[in-house]
Length: 331
Image (tube, one colour):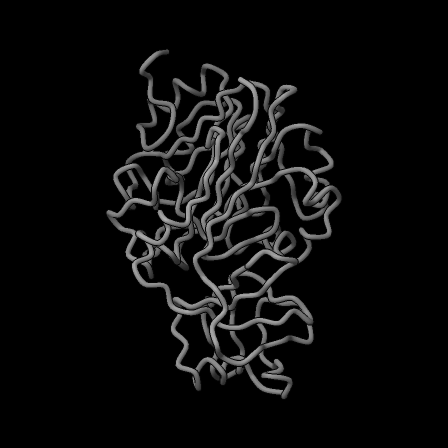
């Protein structure tokens, strides 16, 4: 209906109206709110943090809806055994949105192996990692919700496969303000998300010791060039007794990394860095670490709104990155 709100923060009742119209939707919010929504063509994930048109907010009383303005969608669910099929199931012309629960085996499989999935980097896929309020860490589990069945899951991924008409195409965009600093080059002998030993400018060393010696703050991720794309790997925690660093995404064997340079005034630089696009922005998300470390509470990030997440997907898993998807082409 003309003038009807289809995107952004809204009540459970308003979101239910959109669901009952048969529209394809992605919905973020508190678990208790997602469970109240009717069945339909939607997927959901837990987070109380959002980037809105008024700026970054933490809310438990509303949900954030992103309407895809189409009914030509299919809801799917994947466990660790079939996750690699996710893009084989996607339409030849369209895109997929995936939500994975933080701390789950299915997220670990995606983080480590997604670059090798069939049709990866051929069919567009974006998405995010669900989480919980930071005060609830250790007491509640991140979850996703399959809107077609109404079922909540902590160990599976939910995906919305969207088919586009001829003449339209989907474009995946990322905004990453970090770039490699001037510290030592770090390489790892194995792919993993809890590294200890590494090579520091070619000499055997320890990542936890490098962080301590360089006085690296938690706001600075490791940065690498993955075939021309700058990708961040963020620090989750440091186990000093074991000499290991827990990361939000894996480092890959043989890839050179450096810690990032600090970013001053993230919101202003983010707006300046938003790429120009001619299409309709249908999906967006930004990282909880940017919200925490870059002062996004109450501050806007251009026209990009959506859930604040515990990891982002732009084909592969990202950290401290904003991701959005546009639909380009004829109306």
